[in-house]
Length: 363
Image (cartoon, rainbow, N blue to C red; front, side, top):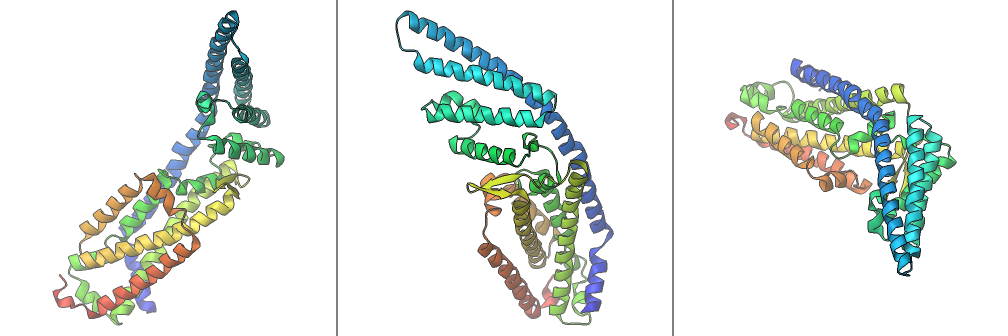
């Protein structure tokens, strides 16, 4: 068995697979340097531009509402609601000016205080029966999201953590979290590398007509199958984790760990470190399942083209359906153990299949 594993390691680390790994690692470095870092550097200028636009918009709203109030007073109508609305937009105008000024001077503490003040002012207006449609530009999602945002900001202020205002700062944990975000470039690279290093795991032997030699080597078919499966799956996981580690390390040495951040999961505040570790475990199991399914497809079809095309199409579907992608990282521990058990069962079935198949007519 040791000899078989050693031979499979040599086979797996072909020039092609080494090239895939090197390209994957270089891709992570390029993604960090030319995507995430510029995205962070452009964040402040884009936010300054946003708040300057809000200042102009708030000024226009205040002016229009003031004119309405004057006309209504002339005809003796009640203007209390409009006056409250005008006061809100005038206060928001001043808050936006403060945020814009402090963004330019990179004063995270003052930015955080003003952002919380702005959100709490909006919450007060909503609690007093304000029309949500009038404040949709500030609400982002819904009222529940606003309340959670205020709670989260209060927690950060209590802990004296103010860098939460720089949402796109590529810290170590922020980089890690991007593997679990819909449309994230890093996870696409990882999945592509897994597919490319697994798709011809068995089909290459059938296409080159060396499968008879392979299965007549010293050792049973079961040992041959298990040695290749173990080597391919484990090395695929190690390669994937190393590529993930590159982004984590780059983020750590450039912008810090970023473990002060919390994420909201089912209305509960979870430290980003715990959230990332949980999702990383899910990712490892799912990558193992993906590797297993590609290997099974390669053995059943005995065709490299099919075993490459099918997972690529599945990847395309996954990356275009946000609900499907999100559901993957919301599975519980029970389902995770079921997937692990399913992987074991699949390999057991494949061993039995190989032991009974007539290899003389395999091609």
